[in-house]
Length: 212
Picture (cartoon, rainbow, N blue to C red):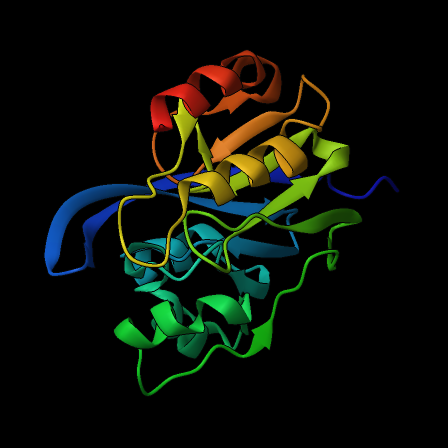
Protein backbone atom coordinates (compact mmCIF):
# COMPACT_ATOMS: atom_id res chain seq x y z
CA UNK A 1 0.00 0.00 0.00
CA UNK A 2 1.40 3.42 -0.96
CA UNK A 3 1.90 5.67 2.07
CA UNK A 4 0.05 9.01 2.12
CA UNK A 5 2.11 11.70 0.38
CA UNK A 6 3.89 14.35 2.39
CA UNK A 7 2.31 17.77 1.98
CA UNK A 8 2.70 21.37 3.08
CA UNK A 9 -0.23 22.98 4.85
CA UNK A 10 -0.42 26.71 5.46
CA UNK A 11 -2.34 29.09 7.65
CA UNK A 12 -2.03 32.79 8.37
CA UNK A 13 -2.33 34.06 11.94
CA UNK A 14 -2.47 37.65 13.15
CA UNK A 15 -1.01 39.39 16.18
CA UNK A 16 1.81 41.73 17.10
CA UNK A 17 5.60 41.92 16.92
CA UNK A 18 7.43 43.82 19.67
CA UNK A 19 11.12 44.74 19.93
CA UNK A 20 13.21 47.76 20.90
CA UNK A 21 10.25 49.50 22.50
CA UNK A 22 7.94 49.33 19.47
CA UNK A 23 4.95 47.14 18.65
CA UNK A 24 3.54 46.44 15.19
CA UNK A 25 0.53 44.53 13.87
CA UNK A 26 1.63 41.56 11.76
CA UNK A 27 0.27 38.60 9.81
CA UNK A 28 2.43 35.49 10.00
CA UNK A 29 2.68 32.40 7.86
CA UNK A 30 2.54 29.14 9.79
CA UNK A 31 3.72 26.09 7.84
CA UNK A 32 2.95 22.44 8.56
CA UNK A 33 4.95 19.69 6.85
CA UNK A 34 3.84 16.07 7.08
CA UNK A 35 1.26 13.52 6.00
CA UNK A 36 -1.97 12.20 7.48
CA UNK A 37 -0.14 10.73 10.47
CA UNK A 38 2.71 13.01 11.55
CA UNK A 39 3.72 16.62 11.09
CA UNK A 40 6.12 19.41 12.06
CA UNK A 41 4.92 22.96 12.67
CA UNK A 42 7.24 25.73 11.50
CA UNK A 43 6.75 28.95 13.51
CA UNK A 44 3.90 28.74 16.01
CA UNK A 45 2.63 32.29 15.65
CA UNK A 46 -0.14 33.97 17.64
CA UNK A 47 -2.93 31.35 17.74
CA UNK A 48 -2.25 27.98 19.34
CA UNK A 49 -5.86 26.87 18.89
CA UNK A 50 -5.87 27.50 15.14
CA UNK A 51 -2.54 25.72 14.74
CA UNK A 52 -3.72 22.76 16.81
CA UNK A 53 -6.83 22.55 14.63
CA UNK A 54 -4.58 22.43 11.54
CA UNK A 55 -2.53 19.65 13.11
CA UNK A 56 -5.73 17.74 13.80
CA UNK A 57 -5.27 14.16 14.95
CA UNK A 58 -1.74 13.89 13.62
CA UNK A 59 1.28 13.35 15.85
CA UNK A 60 3.11 16.66 16.20
CA UNK A 61 6.81 15.76 16.08
CA UNK A 62 8.03 19.22 16.98
CA UNK A 63 7.50 22.96 16.87
CA UNK A 64 10.35 24.45 14.84
CA UNK A 65 11.14 28.12 15.42
CA UNK A 66 12.99 29.74 12.53
CA UNK A 67 14.09 32.47 14.95
CA UNK A 68 13.29 33.96 18.32
CA UNK A 69 11.27 37.09 17.49
CA UNK A 70 8.10 37.07 19.52
CA UNK A 71 5.69 36.98 16.60
CA UNK A 72 7.15 33.61 15.54
CA UNK A 73 7.19 31.99 18.99
CA UNK A 74 4.38 33.54 21.02
CA UNK A 75 2.05 30.53 20.66
CA UNK A 76 4.77 27.87 20.92
CA UNK A 77 4.53 27.10 24.67
CA UNK A 78 0.74 26.80 24.58
CA UNK A 79 0.90 24.52 21.55
CA UNK A 80 3.61 22.43 23.20
CA UNK A 81 1.57 22.09 26.39
CA UNK A 82 -1.49 21.08 24.42
CA UNK A 83 0.28 18.47 22.26
CA UNK A 84 3.35 17.37 24.19
CA UNK A 85 5.56 18.32 21.24
CA UNK A 86 9.05 19.75 21.84
CA UNK A 87 10.03 23.29 20.84
CA UNK A 88 13.18 23.57 18.70
CA UNK A 89 15.25 26.78 18.49
CA UNK A 90 18.83 27.68 17.61
CA UNK A 91 20.64 28.53 20.88
CA UNK A 92 21.90 31.88 19.58
CA UNK A 93 18.31 33.15 19.60
CA UNK A 94 17.57 32.21 23.19
CA UNK A 95 18.21 35.84 24.20
CA UNK A 96 15.22 36.83 22.04
CA UNK A 97 13.17 33.88 23.23
CA UNK A 98 13.62 34.88 26.87
CA UNK A 99 12.20 38.34 26.17
CA UNK A 100 8.83 36.68 25.50
CA UNK A 101 9.06 33.48 27.55
CA UNK A 102 11.40 34.07 30.51
CA UNK A 103 10.05 31.09 32.46
CA UNK A 104 9.87 28.48 29.68
CA UNK A 105 12.97 27.40 27.76
CA UNK A 106 12.97 25.69 24.36
CA UNK A 107 13.25 21.91 24.56
CA UNK A 108 15.87 21.13 21.93
CA UNK A 109 18.59 23.07 20.10
CA UNK A 110 18.73 23.40 16.34
CA UNK A 111 22.14 23.35 14.66
CA UNK A 112 23.33 23.86 11.12
CA UNK A 113 23.28 20.54 9.32
CA UNK A 114 20.63 18.90 11.49
CA UNK A 115 18.20 16.72 9.55
CA UNK A 116 14.62 16.33 10.75
CA UNK A 117 12.60 13.47 9.27
CA UNK A 118 8.86 13.59 8.77
CA UNK A 119 6.72 11.28 6.66
CA UNK A 120 9.76 9.99 4.80
CA UNK A 121 10.91 13.52 3.93
CA UNK A 122 13.95 15.38 5.23
CA UNK A 123 14.06 18.94 6.54
CA UNK A 124 17.65 20.16 6.57
CA UNK A 125 18.53 22.95 8.99
CA UNK A 126 20.46 25.85 7.44
CA UNK A 127 21.82 28.40 9.91
CA UNK A 128 21.20 31.76 8.24
CA UNK A 129 22.06 34.53 10.72
CA UNK A 130 21.43 38.18 9.98
CA UNK A 131 17.79 38.88 10.77
CA UNK A 132 18.73 37.42 14.15
CA UNK A 133 21.81 35.55 15.36
CA UNK A 134 20.14 32.16 15.46
CA UNK A 135 17.89 32.42 12.42
CA UNK A 136 17.52 29.18 10.48
CA UNK A 137 15.86 28.02 7.29
CA UNK A 138 14.50 24.54 6.63
CA UNK A 139 15.30 23.01 3.25
CA UNK A 140 13.20 20.11 1.97
CA UNK A 141 14.92 18.87 -1.21
CA UNK A 142 12.21 16.33 -2.02
CA UNK A 143 9.61 19.10 -1.97
CA UNK A 144 11.80 21.63 -3.82
CA UNK A 145 11.02 24.00 -0.96
CA UNK A 146 12.87 26.07 1.60
CA UNK A 147 11.08 27.60 4.58
CA UNK A 148 12.93 30.88 4.99
CA UNK A 149 11.40 32.42 8.11
CA UNK A 150 12.33 36.11 7.97
CA UNK A 151 15.65 35.62 6.18
CA UNK A 152 14.41 35.95 2.59
CA UNK A 153 11.19 37.38 1.21
CA UNK A 154 9.71 38.08 -2.18
CA UNK A 155 11.75 41.10 -3.22
CA UNK A 156 14.50 41.13 -0.64
CA UNK A 157 16.11 40.13 2.63
CA UNK A 158 14.49 40.29 6.03
CA UNK A 159 14.71 43.44 8.12
CA UNK A 160 18.00 44.21 9.86
CA UNK A 161 17.32 47.58 11.47
CA UNK A 162 16.69 46.32 15.00
CA UNK A 163 18.69 44.79 17.83
CA UNK A 164 20.62 41.57 17.21
CA UNK A 165 20.46 41.96 13.42
CA UNK A 166 23.10 42.62 10.75
CA UNK A 167 22.65 43.56 7.10
CA UNK A 168 26.07 42.26 5.88
CA UNK A 169 25.45 39.00 7.73
CA UNK A 170 22.00 38.40 6.24
CA UNK A 171 23.30 39.12 2.74
CA UNK A 172 26.10 36.61 3.25
CA UNK A 173 23.61 34.02 4.57
CA UNK A 174 21.33 34.48 1.57
CA UNK A 175 24.21 34.39 -0.90
CA UNK A 176 25.91 31.34 0.58
CA UNK A 177 23.02 29.26 1.92
CA UNK A 178 19.88 30.09 -0.08
CA UNK A 179 20.82 31.37 -3.53
CA UNK A 180 22.98 28.28 -3.99
CA UNK A 181 19.85 26.11 -3.89
CA UNK A 182 18.27 25.04 -7.22
CA UNK A 183 16.57 28.02 -8.89
CA UNK A 184 13.20 26.27 -8.97
CA UNK A 185 13.20 25.96 -5.16
CA UNK A 186 10.05 27.55 -3.72
CA UNK A 187 10.78 29.98 -0.89
CA UNK A 188 7.98 29.81 1.68
CA UNK A 189 8.39 32.90 3.81
CA UNK A 190 7.50 33.96 7.33
CA UNK A 191 5.22 36.74 6.08
CA UNK A 192 3.57 37.44 2.74
CA UNK A 193 3.75 35.61 -0.56
CA UNK A 194 6.09 32.82 -1.56
CA UNK A 195 8.75 33.24 -4.23
CA UNK A 196 11.53 31.15 -5.79
CA UNK A 197 15.30 31.15 -5.52
CA UNK A 198 15.50 31.84 -9.25
CA UNK A 199 13.31 34.92 -8.96
CA UNK A 200 15.31 36.38 -6.07
CA UNK A 201 18.90 35.57 -7.12
CA UNK A 202 19.23 38.29 -9.82
CA UNK A 203 18.40 40.97 -7.25
CA UNK A 204 21.27 40.24 -4.87
CA UNK A 205 23.58 43.00 -6.06
CA UNK A 206 20.72 45.51 -6.01
CA UNK A 207 19.94 44.60 -2.39
CA UNK A 208 23.59 44.96 -1.48
CA UNK A 209 23.84 48.41 -3.06
CA UNK A 210 20.59 49.53 -1.46
CA UNK A 211 21.74 48.34 1.94
CA UNK A 212 24.79 50.60 1.81
